[in-house]
Image 1 (cartoon, rainbow, N blue to C red):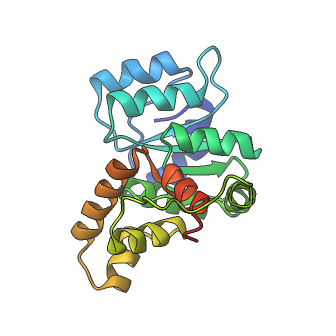
Image 2: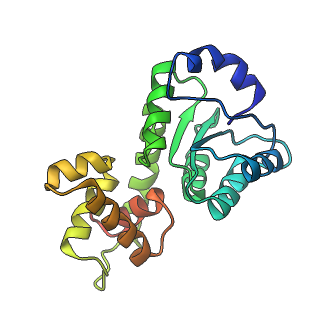
Length: 207
């Protein structure tokens, strides 16, 4: 689901992909939420600039009401604060509007599987912001870290942008086991998404 202008620009591209279907379109957050009440979707393409209800607030509401829906941000904003806010709101990926079609299709498939995806520019901005966070005076390892050794190992790999499949392969465990570890880590650390996990890993000098 996305805006009308995006649908017109990429309709031909999506038609070539047998496993991608445009379920609908919306021009503001209220329309998005109304649409999701009636229609099941896997991924919402979300812009930040959406009139009276911005994409960040809409993303938060979607994740509260429909936690199984994945959000892929597609926006012109490459500033660090927008990226961080969008990911903390629950977005699984972040692309800039000048991204090419190959990157977009790859991002859609990746996010639909439950993994994260960031464009190269976004990854660079995110790494800079989180590195600054790590080097801040308050960035010290917690002595009472609630994670097991295996969970710390999985967390490190998540923070380094490994997919669930890659983690499973490197640790010689099943993808289902990786999913279980991820859920347990989220619960123990009381964070909502991958952005929160990366932030925790950096704050505690795990990467």
